[in-house]
Length: 261
Ligand SMILES: [Cu+2]
Image (cartoon, rainbow, N blue to C red):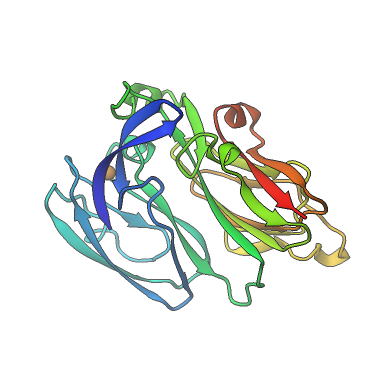
């Protein structure tokens, strides 16, 4: 896992120099099952001190989560003992600014017995606090918790231009993680209903629940929480997905499922 500063178009015509893990924000999504050992080599090729904190592992933070200077590296080994979708992030102070400037990602540890699906997506919500064009996050805006953009997978409105796809009747799973640093999410699919919701390590609803007819309209996530929803689409069309915190949807936390016959 290598820190790199990368100029990124975060919204059409808007460029920021992000601090990234492996070149993108969010960084790579890692995946495994309970019992897996993750052996990470963390390399700082950035321009200031950085660090990494994997929520997916339980261990003493002292050594693996320490900040390291540019040019240094460390090894970080953790065992995935519990299932869920877990945040990882830089934990160098001010952590808010490091996360706001791109230093976050997801680790998915499948719960045992996870049902097969036809389509599976991962959406990581985060905020951008724009600095000068081509520059870095505006720390004053971060402190004020006044984001310019709220985004899925790092870029405002990207799935409006380039929809996620599914077919009528297909089983679709959407993993959602809220990376913050400051704003929670209320994940909703317009025209869709979730028959399954898994949040923070357990099912809130599974196949319609105890009645068999239960449904859910939103997966609510505080900052750093995650889960998944399961649904299928009844007919072809364009089904928008949003954070139902509507001002955040209007700041870019929205996209579209294109459902084909
Ligand atoms: Cu950092």
